Length: 319
Ligand code: AMP
Ligand code: MN
Ligand code: MN
Image 1 (cartoon, rainbow, N blue to C red):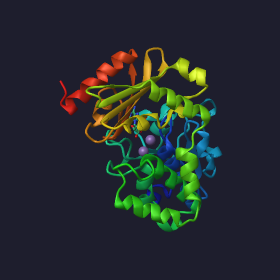
Image 2: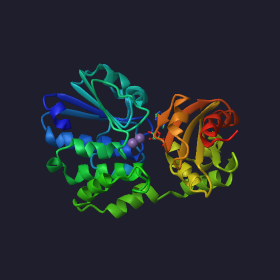
Image 3: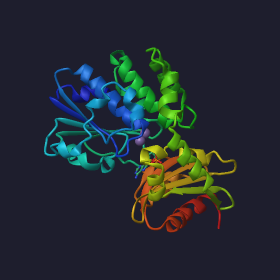
Image 4: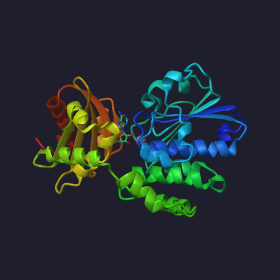
């Protein structure tokens, strides 16, 4: 199946992703947007997403993203709306645009997503939505700018081709993408590894204050709103902390949470495969993958740890 066949006759098309968009979400959404714009020059094509981190400013036409939802007409009816890297429940404020569209397409790789809309392409064995999208595109019609966006998506969801979701096919696609000659080394450095000074400081603080429990097989850390104010950081600046916590020798499961409101926390979990963190996150209305998942929880920091620990302990066979 090729995506172009599903949208060829559409006069108006919109592409969107999930709230707090990560590299795969931004890369996929922009990759598909650039591809469709080139393939269907007559069509009206819009792209909706919460404002991405400025590390993604290197993606062509990133400024076309409609992020100011106040100025968006939520009653507009698109011929096709394609939502990527999530189900429509994580779209945020533009969800009505998807629901009102004449044709709704969902392309994702989250095991926790049953799919939504009229056409549901959810393949959990894929490293990333960007990888899946590349196969849904006509390779001959992919240009350097689309390739770069998809490359960023794959790099971010595979932790630079390090996570176990990386397959031989992922690497074959990466080989095709780097043939376009963009400076992939610089892209990886600037979008994945480089941190600002305050990002480095808050990561240091979170690591310093981390605590191990469950016979040292779990590790947890938290960043409060007060800390975020002190270091002048936003949630975008906290990426990478949970992965760093999982790197501690002997740890099977890492939990990182930051305060989003009064008694409200955004939870990120990572595992080395011994714990299915998606199933833990799903108990609290979240989801994700076996080794990387998230949710939002209400309650105190310690209540949240206790509640998450129940599902983790069951899987680690700890009383
Ligand atoms: P995070 O730790 O927030 O970066 O998320 C890890 C993985 O879980 C990513 O693939 C997210 O897309 C997914 N995820 C995070 N939060 C949720 C949620 N509330 N519902 C479904 N999937 C989520
Ligand atoms: Mn994502
Ligand atoms: Mn993804």
